[in-house]
Image 1: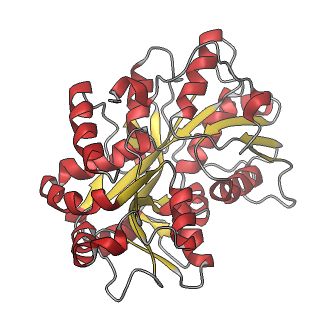
Image 2 (image 1 turned 120 degrees about the horizontal axis):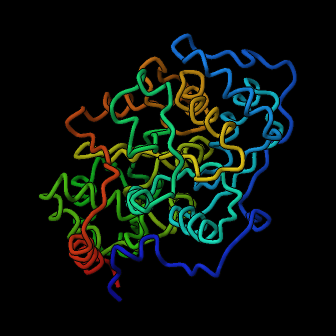
Length: 381
């Protein structure tokens, strides 16, 4: 069945409204802030003087925050910890872990009834964000005072900011891949061409029928049109999966020997805990870097607390917490260190000319159909 652009986020019915009590599986709640908070309510000198009014208004909102996101709980943990140290009156942060597209499906369903508990939306599904943001009244207007301190690509869309810039990788099982390790898509295609039977159904690619998989795969192909010759070698051996977490689990287990365009965020902790059994590498012929967007929901019940949170994750302090949680910080004064990953690390590894920064721009339905037909037509049957 041909999948059109509309299906990237529109596959839902308005009657299927899910309240906050249905956040259930995959949700996490951060309760009381740790004792002895540091830097309580201190804000940078470049913030406007009236910012104190935002803080006071947030204190009156009840100390809660609800986030709809596709971000893993281990990624959130240091961010919530340090945010609550800074603003100890925020006693409860509830964040679910939805599919990339489901963040917007749920938000739109609830907004249709005028009763959504969401304060913030966080997702790295670029196409879904672009479609969602073009609809009227789907985002609250907010100009963060941190924007002036950040690079231009920090603003992804009006009122949507980059929380992190997460690179895509090739991940592989070191015990099974063979002596030659892939360094990019071209090298992977050369490896599999030598023994295609070994790799038949043993490679994994991200499902391009979802907004995340479409964004990273389409942007790579657009930036590297000559790479279709390599894709024609690897895709017939590959099976699609709907999450990087599933892909890394199956690579570690040996079900797959390797996978490409796998998000580094969920892959890093697997590599760390694998005792050398799994490795990841940036693609030396084109590493897609996908921003993780954050925006404030319209009619957010805790709108001022949401503003504080947006400003925090964009700040130097917040970006360090972002990196500690396994996401990729892009603020220049946050440096890579043991366990902390930065955008500059990707640039240093592959060269700026080989960084493909995904844009939050809507692709025409015709172009979507053309791409999906070509990509899916090559996949293993």
